[in-house]
Image 1 (tube, one colour):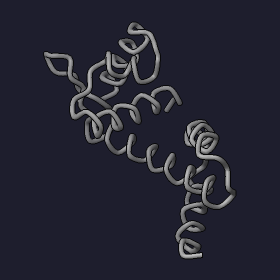
Image 2 (tube, helix red, strand yellow):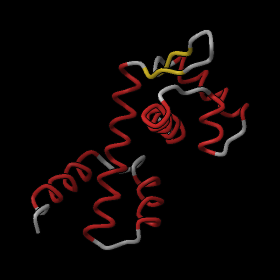
Image 3 (cartoon, rainbow, N blue to C red):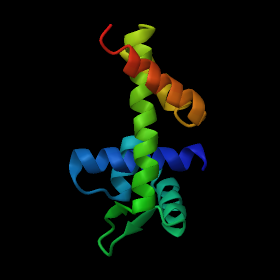
Length: 123
């Protein structure tokens, strides 16, 4: 899946937790993207069965969309924790780098980071 689509799914998940309901305009504001760009992405995610959009324009993640969004969000959180707690990067830089890396990190490397954090969480 393309990085931009993953970013949209993650943003929908985060906004849903924060606001309860999500519309395209909320995504555009959160990501600072144009409304036409978001509309196009929403259409693609809908066609690929990652989201549904009701008659009022509210967006819901499908089961497939929730799984993908949660996976990306977990990667973001684990990477951010590793960067801040283990290698002592500032929270701002850790967030930025996690946002980039979460889309390209291999499952093996990610699983290794999770194991490392779990094995060393009380140190």
